[in-house]
Image (cartoon, rainbow, N blue to C red; front, top):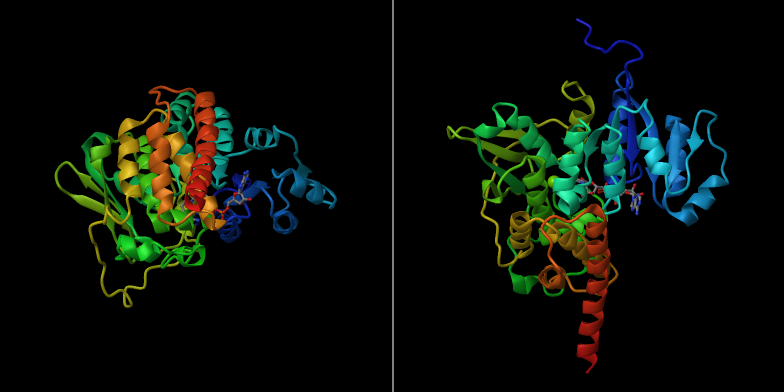
Length: 399
Ligand code: NAD
Ligand code: MG
């Protein structure tokens, strides 16, 4: 039986953040399924040479470079005849709202990913969501927009993809709780005192996943799991007390759904983002693709442990923010982004990352139902607060 889709029905994919870890995995999936998927639009921030190579290979309809300096360098090079360079503030908006686009994969890192996701949903597009920060910052507004525009959000984050897949065994009202698995990052099993002098190079060594720098640091602090608790809360409309976290060092079980009758369903596969990306791009179909497969003869054991909230206080922040909602998500997300980049620059210690997030969260002006522009203002304020905190700390050390 031939299961290939009819000619001409290839899904047209826009990849926002095509030069990143998720972006390049997405292109690998597109390469493996040429009869189903087509790269229709590509965007990147500063790595324009890599983007140029991608454009020459995929010959997309649209391309855009968001960093102004990189955009100038990029614009000096000839493009394939079928490719149009979009520039200016509306470039991403024009790309994602093209009527011919089927799916927008949002793989930009950080709060910068919110605009592209928002514009894609506004245009009624299916969004394959890798950029979890979108839901952390503005979960209720984003979900409301998706509903209003009848636009689907398909999770790419491996845990959320696992939950989404397992949830299909029952009705949303039949879910008792979900359990997010966490590898525990490079410092699993360590105590607080072991983490005082951690360097960026040490924190960038993830044991199971190969990812961009920001999410790799988030995994080391376990802020990534905190962000995922918040992401799950809004995406699946769960109460925070229905979300649990368990350490699972092998990263093979990508999460669990426990139904009201006590039955627990999980999704398993080796740690390889190609699978959740592909599932979001070909949904609801499952097809043979490039993702690694479980080698059952090599699989010896699957381990689970309780997380250590004393050593990784970021997790507590995740639960608290999921509970309080309002402006908390935008504030935590921006404070964490600023703290991670200061840590990578050698201006902040590893243990100070959750510490400064806690301070900024505690001092912000909380509002329960903020607008998008209020959230953006809180984002800017939080980043400034982190810088102020770092400067004050440096001064107190000199004195
Ligand atoms: P990355 O750093 O490898 O790539 C980021 C991409 O975003 C690049 O293409 C870059 O050009 C673009 N970008 C960066 N700053 C930008 C800006 N200001 N404006 C526009 N574009 C910008 O990151 P990644 O690891 O691929 O992660 C991307 C997103 O996916 C993050 O939100 C992350 O949390 C999420 N995610 C990643 C993984 C993973 O395995 N890497 C897993 C789950 C979720
Ligand atoms: Mg994840």
